[in-house]
Amino acid sequence: MIDPGDFSSHWRECANPDCWICRPNIATRNLKVALKQERKDEAVPAYTSPRPHTFEESLDIMYAQCRQVMIDRHRKYGRGNIDAFGRQGVVVRLSDKLARLKTLLFSSRGAEAGDEKELDTWIDIANYGVIGLLLLCNMWGLPMKGDKSESAGCDR
Image 1: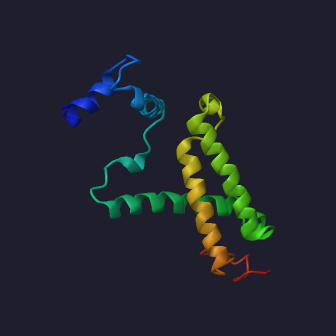
Image 2: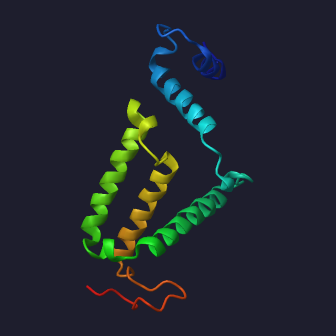
Image 3: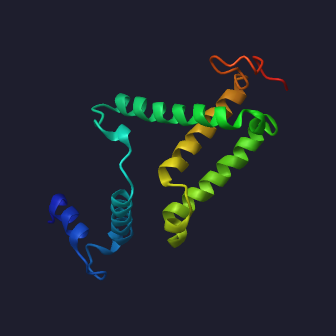
């Protein structure tokens, strides 16, 4: 019987595409190699250091990153683009982001996909989910702290 630890290290290191142990794992191994290369190519975001010690700390880090991007984009673009089409527009934008993610992860064109990195795409997907929730719960359209130029509440 093969020890699972030995099996795992074998298929990570084996280069034989016809190996009976590796064949089911070649796609997984290739994905891991591609992800390792991508990590080498990208600068490690500052928020990954120090590493979180709990799941809850991980959530805090990711939510803080998403929140900052959302605030920056809201200041830059305002709320009009979301107001124009509501939840249906958010679904279209999510569809676009999922198509982008599919290209980044599964296509040979992923590396040439332009200026948007995988991390940015995941953050955008998370933030569009939050925008959808804000719209659904009638919380979209509130003014930002210190911003007196937009009225409170939704104009629709």
